[in-house]
Image (cartoon, rainbow, N blue to C red; front, side, top):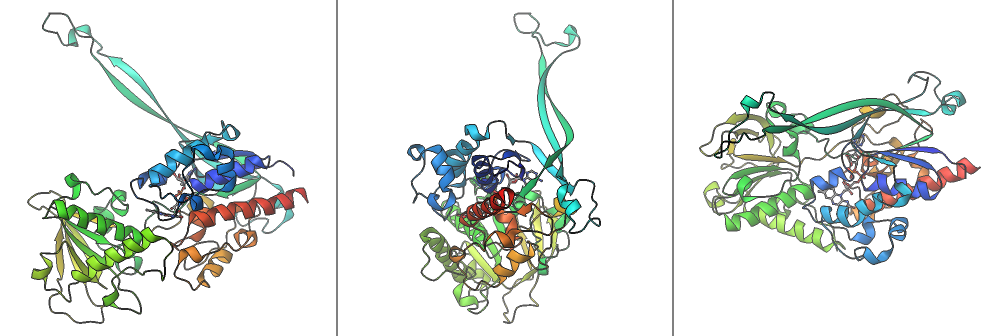
Length: 458
Ligand SMILES: Cc1cc2nc3c(=O)[nH]c(=O)nc-3n(C[C@H](O)[C@H](O)[C@H](O)COP(=O)(O)OP(=O)(O)OC[C@H]3O[C@@H](n4cnc5c(N)ncnc54)[C@H](O)[C@@H]3O)c2cc1C
């Protein structure tokens, strides 16, 4: 096989797996990571993965590291453990030495000399390399002494103390790199969706919420204990937040949760908000769904009166939209929120539904979406519903099982774009579809590299 220059965007699990396999196949590989290796997983490092280590790692990665030091195939690791016990060792393999560039954000990608509207589908366009604009951030520390010795403080002994403070300087440099093949493995986290009705920001959301409120925080006593938190979302991240807050409430009894989550389409409100997978092989996932649904059903506002619900840590508000957020000053917090609700899409009538909530904290686990801005100069045909590449999206929309474990990959052809040699892999390839699993991304890497190998040597 001929050696190609590979640029990989993102040093997450899929970018690293791709880098290692491409190196093993003899390519000249460079990974550009905007933060640290596995930056996004470290952000939710306290959460335990549902899938066991054997499914979250590749055979070529395990082979290169040697099995002795690795977790067992059935071990369920936290995000941090996966990073420390597998992904960082992977990034430190000699094959990847000097090839992973942290603090390097890819800002834009284009085909050299060809604008988006030029040379569409032509051999001349394909013959040019892909260029990447990269922003590298570096920091240096310097020590600043007091400019005049007279300004230095005097110790009890009468001696002057050499006073100094440290200053951190940030330098930002931009450069362009060229590549024959680009794999965009930059994920979707933390480009969040909005919490308002039908995906639009609700009134006040853009001003009042910051990025951290769309993530999955650690439920510390200092931040959430004896406070009222509004959780929004119907997926496993929201379920994790609710179950962890309910656990905090057993130790700090004034901890309360309002949970806004859709009821399940066909089963209504009796089933709780989280869809369970029949005979779920991932036991931890099933336990989480069961626990979250139990908490929701007990505290469902149409069943319990708000007064009854006051004795239960979780109050579930099904099928309601948030109309607006306003900042309030609560007696404990400067930054509480007044939340205005809109029940107009709910089929059921109920007299005890609140029209407003007053909360101290908001966790909006409403999903993530791909950042498409980096490849907007390339030719990528996207699905109008999920914003993933169209051929894969069409296959995924045709899948009927609710179990993401039942998914298979669909071959390298569905990952091809009209722009030759540009591939979107990993969680970003699923666009807004949240069913992605590492197992699928690892298989994508193998399939794409195999097919490129055949083409490059053919
Ligand atoms: C809370 C949570 C729990 C999950 N649990 C599981 C589980 O149990 N099992 C499972 O299989 N999956 C799970 N997933 C889903 C999925 O496997 C993970 O999201 C996984 O991290 C996706 O890997 P990735 O490499 O595609 O993307 P990411 O891990 O998101 O990595 C992308 C990398 O690209 C970098 N990057 C982004 N933009 C740029 C840019 N412009 N330039 C340079 N670098 C950039 C980021 O900093 C990041 O390091 C979970 C997801 C979440 C959020």
